[in-house]
Image (cartoon, rainbow over all chains, first blue to last red; front, side):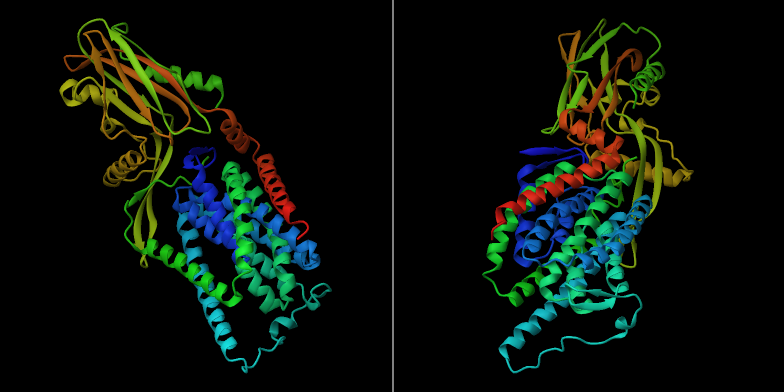
Length: 306
Length: 247
């Protein structure tokens, strides 16, 4: 059954959209990541204009993050002070990101920029995750191997504006979370992702936050950054398709339930290795598409309407 | 677009495009003067029917609202295919289709076809910035090919069927991705390869119901729309977390 999406101005099968939301929700339930990095490329693949895909994914992210934060908050696993410090940078970053997005759209290069960002981010991420998970699997086989040091001092700890984050038991420069939030804010606006896959490792390894606090706190700031991106996209580019968002959310909610249950039966390192393979496969596909001769040498981008 | 401006535009178009003489030699109408894009919209068809006073042939042309369109050429930059060159055309109809009672070449003289813009090849596009004749031709061809791929320029012309000597009818098919706005249907009466009469009639394509509300809201109250989109997502997220409250 086809449904006409009023902003994307295409007719797509309603069950394909629900299924896509469900599949991405399932993966995010299994792996504990937002899944935006898979959702946006898949939407583009089924015929949603890239600009609409990015903006609507950001909107979908708001809903997905709210339900995630509530779950973590009930367990007391959200550091609000850290979340809002990250947010300061995140909001500034999303303003810059939207400005870049509109600029590249006007230059006719936004599709290329989105694809390139995905290839680079997914490539690096998949590679790092793959190595890390293989090491973890190997370490388990040799239980005598040394554990890594918990806390290492680097130049990052010498920065000014030292602030105490009681909940995370940290005393670090506020510039670190602000800078991290800023970087993720830019990516969120340009790629339609929450940036959880950059944020989470950075919070653990760079900021040194306790692992239990990380997902809830990262999701907290993603809610606001994604909301800001949605507002800005709606205002500047008119590319947020609320009907598309709603369908993805409905599918995603159901998928996430199944995903979470399935995820608890699998082992962490093996999960991360599987995710790494998946991420690398998406990156390879996108990179391949950029380098083969396109079917049509002349195109009319449908990105931004007046 | 305001209603007054739309009416003016239609009037203007009619004044420019109407053939001079024998305006009453052909009478035609559409089965419907509006196409409503609803939530279940997957395309539409409109029947054009009419009668001619004397023996002859009929051509019908439908043109959608004109808009500025940029065509990009892809080129290889450092091993990656990117948009490298562009030409912007000022007046590209968002839809174009022709139906005729006989093969066009046998029926209309090239001069008349060019004058009344009958056939995709007779559409004239103005480039927004001067691009040189060679490049303009190349990009015009590419524009037409891209519009045909998108299904908004018909690749072949439709057939107008005669029922007896006087009555004719044809069906225009519109795909799901047609642009909204005022369309103009021109019916030409042709004898001895010349246009000797004609009529124009409007057709409006618009979104209705929920889709119209959503897209109107999104373009006129962009900030409010964004706020509601965010609120909707927050609500959905909150609802989704309710079943897990006690786990």
